[in-house]
Every structure is written in C-alpha cells, then in structure tokens.
Image (tube, rainbow over all chains, first blue to last red; front, top):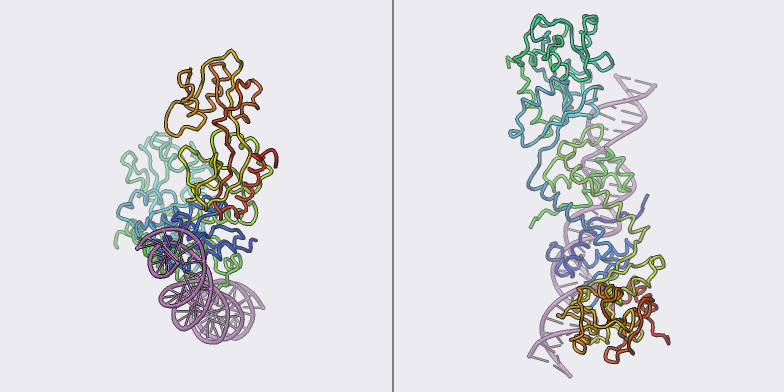
Length: 276
Length: 276
DNA sequence: GATACGACTTTCATTCATGCAAGTCAGTTT
DNA sequence: AAACTGACTTGCATGAATGAAAGTCGTATC
C-alpha cells in the first residue's frame, strides 16, 4: 500500500537526536558513530520528504516539522524500553494455550502452582468446538482419546471414571446441561439413558454442581471432581460407558518450545496415571 | 546501559510474520524478499536470546514466548501507521513557537486565520523571562526593540502606542498588575508615574481589562487593543514614554524553515506598519 | 508409490551501509 | 589576527546485509 515504509531505526535515532539536541551527544548515547548518524538522518529526511533539522553551525536543531514528528513518535522509546526489559530481564511467563474439558480445566487450574511455573502461564481456551491442535489453535490439548493425526504427539494420562453424585440417596432426578451441540460425552450419556429423569438444566457445568449441592438433583461428574467434594456422595458404580483415558496432546514441534515443554511436564504430573 | 539494543525494524517484521503466520505472506506484504526475512528473524532470535518461532514444515508458527512478545509490541504497528499517515498525507501543521507580550499574543491569536495556515500552528510560549531566541527556546519573537545579537534576523513592524483607557472620564484610579519582576514596560511606567493612584491590582492582564470594563478604574493598554474595544474610551494622549516599534525576530537559519517562514510572513502581515 | 508443490534455507556475487580518518567551517580564545 | 575548538560532512576501504537462484524437506496429489 504505502511504498515508503518509514524506517523505525532511523526514527529511533531521530528521537535521540531530538532529545539530545546534537549529533555528538546522541552518537555517544546510542553508541553509533557520528558520521553514521549524520548520513542516516540525511537519508531519513529524504525518505520522509521533510526537512527535520536546521543544520546550523552550533549543531542540529529541530525544524518546526521535526518537533511535530518528535512529539508524534515519542511513544517509540517507551516501547523500546519496555521490550528491552522484557528481553533481558523479566522474561514474563509465556501464555500456553490449553484446551481441555470444563472439569479437567478446573482441576488443572487448581493443581498447577503459578509460582512454581516462572516460564509459562496457562491460558485455557474454550473447547466447545474441537480446536485443531494441528493448526495450532492451541498449544496443548487434553482429550479423551488419542488424536487421529499422526502429526500430533500424545501421552497417556490417568484413567477417568464418571459416576452419579448427589447430596444423598434420597435425591431423585438429574441436573445437567441442556441438549445441544458440543455437549460433553457424560452429558450426552445422561440425556440418552436418563433423559426422562432430568429435573433441571443449567447452562454451565459449575452451576449444575451448585444445583446438585443445593439438592435439586443428581449429577454425573468425573470421579476426580465428585470424590473431592465432601458434600457429595457417590450414588452409583463408575459408569462403564464413560470410562476413558485422558490423553495429553500437542504439536510435535511445539513440544520442544521451553514454555510448552514445561507446561506439558507440569500437566502430566498433575494428571498422571496412578501407576506412573 | 543496555548493550543489546533491540532492532525495531526486525521487530516490525516479526510482528508482520506473527500476524500473517508465514514468511511467504509477510514477505509479500512487506515487500521484503523471503530469504531476508528468514535471516533477519534468525538474527532477531539470536539477539533476543529467545526462540520465537517454531519452524515447522507448514510454515512459521509462534512459540509461546513469541506470542508474548507480539502482544507486548503490538502498538508498534499503530505508531508506524500513524507516522506513515503523517509523512505522506496529513502533514499536520507544525507548531511554531512564538514568544510575545500578552496583548500582542492575544492580538495575533485573533488575527491569524487557522484555516489559511495549513503549514503551521502558533504555539505561544510565555515570555515572562526573556527567552533566548539564539538558543532556539522559541522560533519567533516579537520584541519592542531590535535584538542585541547580530545572529538574529529582525524586521520592523508597526509602531505601538499606549494610552490610558476607561469606560468614561469619570472613572478614577488605575487597575494594573502587582509590582514585581518581569513586569511589562507599560505597567512599570504606571507604577512609577501613577503609583499612588492604583485602585486595584489583578494577576492577569486580561483580568485588568475586565476590571476596567466593570468600572473599577483606568488601564494602560496598547492602542491596538484599547481602540478595538468599543466599551472603552481613550482618556489620554498616547504616552510618549511607552511608544516603540515592534520587532519581529527570528533565528537566521530558522527563518528558512517553511513553516517558520510562513509564520513570519503571516505575522508580519498581521502586524505590518501602516505604510507598508 | 511417484511426482509436484509449498515453504523455507543455503549459496554466492553484489550492493549498501559502516566506521575510521581527514576535511570543512563558523565561532571562540589568546 | 592567528590558532583553536566544537560540530558536522566527505572520502575510502572494509564488512555486513541483500537478493536471485538453486537446494532441501515434507506434504499433498494423482
């Protein structure tokens, strides 16, 4: 679109000169030799088509237009400073995009210790639609079966059982999500096998749990959630149809990226099969 | 301080790649050949000490850290876009710093037509202290006598007379500024010759005029102000001791800067001597 | 299963920017 | 008045970045 892409490095030098008021001073502060500065500013003026400096005998002074440009671009130095800090100091934790089911995400969020992960930060992305790890829509996925594509790296995690929970055996009926696309397997199973016993629906899994805790009905939960909730009792044997392994899936190449690797290790530890 | 100055051009290319998702795409959009992009990104990674890309078979994908950097630096493109616009389109008016006395500044502000000056915009700087035009603390000065330094360009403008004004001859006493350093010549003259007739003082010349209009006393004003105010009557002959020429002063080199030149011409026209 | 394609990397001659040293020029000092 | 100083510009040899073409590697197509 715009042929004359403004050179940001020249611009940065320009700002330094504008602040210093002379080539000599700016040259020292930037560690750039003075002749280079002189030539680059000449080029910069040509490229902008403006006269930015008054080349007086007493040094460089900004023209009116030069001052306008300097004030226009003043944020540049802040950006540079911020990035320099990011590069050589902070190294803030990098966000690692994780896609997982609702309960697994919640379990993970509570298991992972943020202070022990200086390298990465979990970023849970909703997994309603099936995100395509192969297309890097997320970095790490936790799935209930191994991926189809051979390009994805996989690792088997713990076995996950589901069961029916409630605050007591006297509670009848079920609380679940409304029927619709993108429903988790456990909710689909409930709709298929106990569809006529559904007492209430709620739009959010966590809300279903709250309703169950209030006595509105029974819920189907992963055992790692249901067993951890002291106010709930297991009201059935594990549901065979819903038993599955959890699989940790990531892109073959992404897993060598340090933050992602760290995330993979931490997640694997949190969701390890008991035997491992 | 920081040896490894981050290269803003590389960063900009990095953002383009991050947005595009591939070297090929970014190369076209930036007009930079693909091999160059490849090498510069390799160098950029070395300079930051981070792995920013996953070089997969399907193109470049950002690592977690790469995404962190991209979001950290996202403003850069806005800045660049804004500057590009500034450079090749808008050419917003450049601020020209003008130092002048209070009433002259006011007269100028009302005389200069902003729409007829696409090249520059007046920026009035307070002239309490004597600003040093030779040191470029301002671009243009309007003084009541020619400058001392031979390095400054000068141009004689209209003659300025002062007189005593009031809403009528019946008003006695004077309104003026309180005694102090940095007082204009007309106020000094009033304190010296009519010091015992001062009725009120105000901290601002404009406020003095308002007080005079309200009948609190007489004021000394330049005739170009007093005569233009229909509610005021001239109550004295022009004061000989305060008569002076106005001088338009600027730096010898600065006056060839187009915006400053335009400003000089406009000011000279607004404040021209009647004969010219 | 062989071939074509896409996306980058590498090679190499060339160009361009760099950085040192010398040059210019106005104002200042002695 | 002559020499000095400060602040930039110019010349020239060097080195680094560039860009066109060929190379590599994996995936998609037939």
